[in-house]
Length: 430
Image (tube, rainbow, N blue to C red; front, side, top):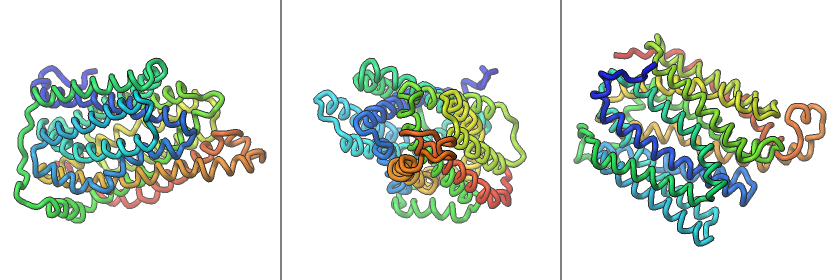
């Protein structure tokens, strides 16, 4: 099966170059992020400390996204993307310098992750608009499937490459791969990609542009409802991400290699899901697809991991939980790109980032805090009780298993309760 036919390649040439090289760069950055998580867990043994890395990356989304989107609408998208890439590369080189001199500490990583997160906050809306500008509307669903495919490959390769490189070369090899991927993406964007200018207002103040993004969401309740629904989904998913290392790493059958394999299974599932999203016909109701896929994902994976003790079941849980995510993403992407005028997309996407992703740092903190300070102490005190021992096991990691059960219940309730509200909306495409 071919996701892109030969006669379509010419029309999508710029998109394919930008998509492929940026995907390689994202893989390099993801490898570094995963390796730093392993390094910090080795130093601290704390789920909360490793979750703090991701919190520092996502915090700028909450604080600065609205203004970043306004900037992307006002200024040249290509220059914004190039500038942000350079700053992110400088952060990576700083990590290398600190590591080489044996000066690297957790707080260094928190600060540098915050700076990198800020650069990504500015770059992301510019990149989204650039993608819209360089591809015809008739390819929106198909290219969304391709982007999900690349994200899936990154999810597979990232933990496997990160654990392998980190085991054999330490952070040296990891950072070398990251910087090499940056050079490839930066050169391709600088030399080979032409991004048309949108009709952004060059004279309007940034604050006014940000208010326009919020006003658009206020006047379009369907878009707002979808964003808030996804905020709830992200709350549970990010808490799961914070709990997973504390669940797998201390388990007698776990460890860093197993964590890499389990994490990569989500990417494998998303590859199949991406293929499905790319070939599915236009659905009758995209909104229902978004709601039902998330109910299936959150209502299965967390429960399966909570009650299983074998790595094979952890992998199966990841596959079940992630296989329909690309289908959801493709339908959400089509709704956003067709419902939001291109000249407003930067500021609206940025407002979306703030409202949809502000729950991620909250979820990461809550997940790490609950595992370290609530669930693990609870299981140490009461874990020998028959039913708790049967359900969650014993020893370190049993508290993380209890947290998985809590997340399964919360995720299901979020989908059921907010899904009823989503059902009343009908999206008319084209």
